Length: 484
Image (cartoon, rainbow, N blue to C red; front, side, top):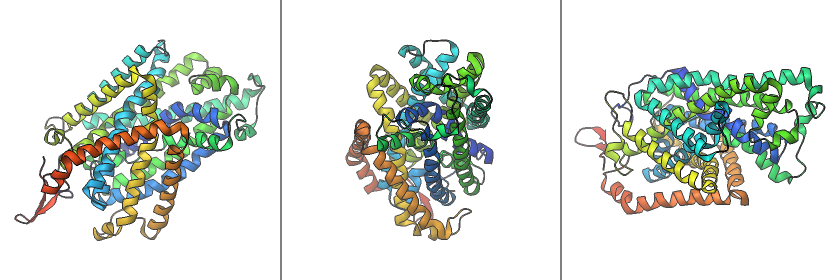
């Protein structure tokens, strides 16, 4: 019994598997390949130095989340932490944002990230919308199928993805850096020095350039808490999950900076690379040729597929956790765990259907899908902001739970305060500029829909006790929760 819930999953995930989950969801390979062009064209090569700023800011956030994971190792992590620190209604809002993030983020990664690279490797037309849609659908179907079979299969895919991430970013960037250092005079620009890393695009206002350059790290360095979403399947979760989150944050921050420096110094012709639809592939092709570049792109595609696998697992556990507390339509079905596979099959199928529906909608209206994907940059930071707000307001509840294997101790308030300051700055940067206004409306629309469900149905369920966190049952001395 964990926090009032009967055990629903076997505990099979150990330390490396949990680290692989957190590291694969962050996916520096996906983040850098998808977002590098934006930072390069807005700020210029100097954008690489905003990565460590984002890495430090997110490390502060992860430290707070790790303490919560040590106290409350439960599926649907941010939802559970917020609900138990504040109340179920607050947790429902955080959980709904998490569902929105996954529903848009997964098809976005499949269509915008994986599909064009896979088409390039296969020699297909990477500009053909139907080709990209087909590849994205197949990738999503395979990712969810892996999760339906058994969580151990998903874990093995993600264990391999750790090495694919390193090969697809760090090894490739270091190799390009060595070739640049030894042959830079042969480049079209005649060769540039290390000072190139300080170059700023003169055509962009500095403030806009800084925001754009920072987005490489801001878009990428999220999702560490996916390891906590799988906590009910982890061995010794109170110890292993916090460590996995912190180590993944540190490793992602360091390796991401190494990769960005290597790629940027190896740029052979800034104008040509900025004009390329896949700048990193253009850099690699110049130095390695098309065949070896395709080999590395295969590794990158696998890394993106692994991200889909683990993100699908994380999303289904959030659906399961909220349904277990009766917060969603069809809660009884969504919280079932298949006895043969030990996976929440119904939650996985529902998550897949939602992803495919949004993928179809976004493909029919490309502008709409661009806006939807843009909203996924803001949503995780809103989730972190709300979760840390609950932590700062109700941290004494953690002390009432007794000691945990990981605690910030006296550093808790300074760390959480700095993390909140960082999150406020990021949320402001992602909401105030006119360029992000349409994405803001998407988030507000999602919150409005969740509000309608709350007013129409959930408020009554919470009031009459048929939904919400487990409550004490005086007749048995145990905790219970009724599913609507």
